[in-house]
Amino acid sequence: MVGLDGESRLVSPASRVIEFMTGNNPITLYKSNGTAWEPEQALDGELAVDGEIVELSLAKTVLGEVSAGVVVPAQVVITGEQPFQFKSVAPLAIQYFSFEPVTSLLLIEDPEGDDIGLGTYTYPKDGVFKAGDFDLTAFEVSSDGANLYFSFALQSPIANGWNSPSGFSVQTFDVYIDKDPGAATGNRMLLPGRNAAFAAENGWDIALWVEGWTPQVVVPGDDPMAEPVKNTEASSAMKVYVDVGKNAVIASVPVEFFGEGSPSDWSFAAVVLGQEGYPADGVWRVRDVSQNAESYKFGGAPLDNNHTRIIDVALPADFSPDQVSVLGTYPSSAAPVDGKGPDDFAIIPLIAVNK
Ligand SMILES: [Ca+2]
Ligand SMILES: [Ca+2]
View 1 (cartoon, rainbow, N blue to C red):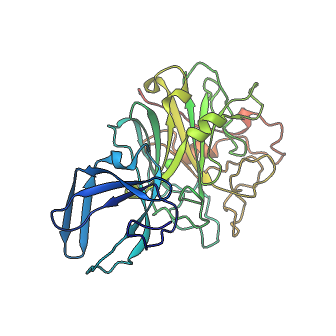
View 2 (cartoon, rainbow, N blue to C red; view 1 turned 45 degrees about the horizontal axis):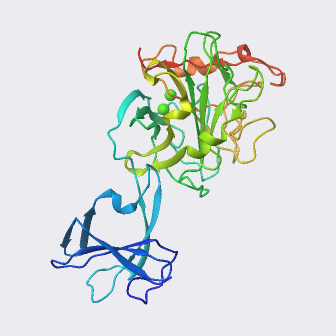
View 3 (spheres, protein in one colour; view 1 turned 180 degrees about the vertical axis):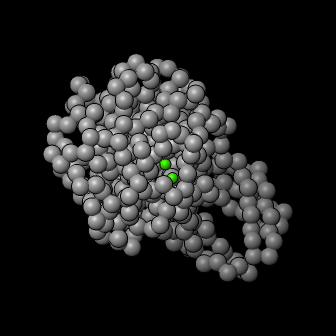
């Protein structure tokens, strides 16, 4: 495929061209008819050129039907004489964020430096793991009316050491939603391998499993000890992306997948773990914590089998009991975790929107 000038090679097929030039010239949108570019319309926009900086602002509709989190591949083609230090054919991408008003429903500001799980956990030794990678600084739930947004801000810049399609690699974030806290419905056990549970009066009704490769929306299985069930329709509607400006991983899910009720009546729990592509048996892709850290294992675990794999729990700094007590309080056991129930693991608090 070639550019509007009939010469420049495009690195991938494109559906639209926006043409603009310095001076008081029209800004024109072209669309492809399959073989050639056809002028579609003149665009209202503002163009500013200052030295080597060119700024163009246009209505968001120019990108067509896109929603929050979508990354639109784009390419700049410069023709004619140009004073810029810019490749004449340069690929880039436009990340599209929500432009609707967003209402914050819940904000948990988590302390820095508590990425130590139950108090003693240390990071795996491989260089891909950087200080602060698992240190949550804030968890926020917000809504634009059509979607719920779940934001996990981290202490360190978010890297993508293993090149996941979602822009981050080493972390896994779980969100558990209890739509009727205190009613003792839903699942008490967190997702397989987390080695954590909710108190007897609580249970999650829908959960998000947010990681770089296989993010899922899940619901409880038929009975409390059965494996949770992946909701494939909701999972394909979920978008997971990195907001570089907020240093946060964002997951958005259309509100219809949460069913009846109002999020302001719900309670939430959010936890950070290590993503693991080669997990232990029965573990849903989260990294082991051993007594001693290894290249790809966290260290600092007690000498037992049912310690949690959670590295950071979203809890306010003044929350009581604190995170170390929450994760460190469980009946330590060297027996296999198979067949263990919720009372054999650390009990995670849920945070209500209406406290
Ligand atoms: Ca933290
Ligand atoms: Ca925490």
